[in-house]
Length: 72
Image: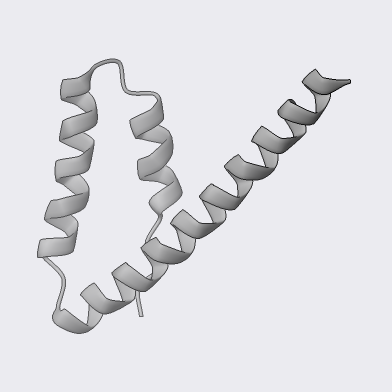
């Protein structure tokens, strides 16, 4: 089983200096996915879903903390 470093792609995308650079990073991720065996694609999808759920939870937590701080 491979471990995919989605955080690395996410940080690179957030720090991209242009839409073109961000598109290139996204294409890199798509190319990686296309190169995988069907079994590894399933694992990739599962790990990506876990990463996205954690990131969304973190963002929601950050948002709530900021929102709470503004109401005081």
